[in-house]
Length: 237
Image 1 (cartoon, rainbow, N blue to C red):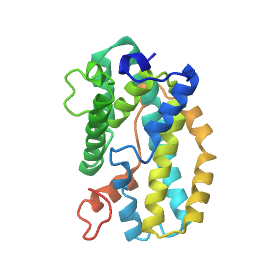
Image 2: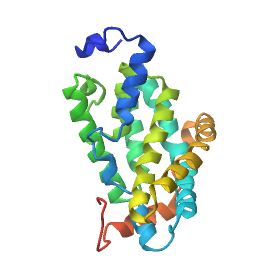
Image 3: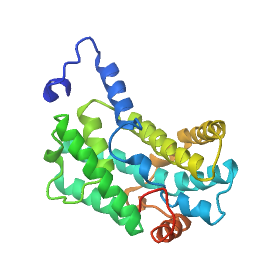
Image 4: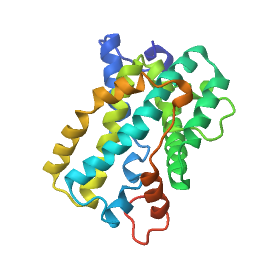
């Protein structure tokens, strides 16, 4: 569906293969949107001693999965896909505003916007017509860009959810490996522990009514706020 529109030669690839490889591309750490430069409060949690080993890091990230990713980002993926398919610019703007308003600190909002802008620049260079779906949204977000690319590249919403979960977990686990610090093997063990939760998170996301979409992670918001003024930092604020 998208190969001809983008002017990219995908000869020899079936539709499902094309979609799978493009999903791999979108969730790759090599995607130049700066995902590896943020810790979402984890850096302060390590500084404060809240996260000090693999077990406490996995617990920290599981809290985010259950109380934010499964109830905010994953349900929004379904809604963004629906609005993109209908070219409902008002609906897209409303969903974008909901996502931005759910980022409770300046740091978290800046991350969403900065990564969104970087992704949109990249998608335009790859000839993905992302502007058609932005409308008057001056502060694009990463999730919308992923969903536009996913829709045009034939990636299903469920596959996008799985990819988003993996990318989110990989970025933050690798941040934890640097910060705690942990050994590389502990990082891989943490990823195995977190991925065991993914099917449940996807199931939860499918049961969230639109009025209940949101995030409730006060400890993450507190850590993010304190990280904004943390004296020594490896990760962006």
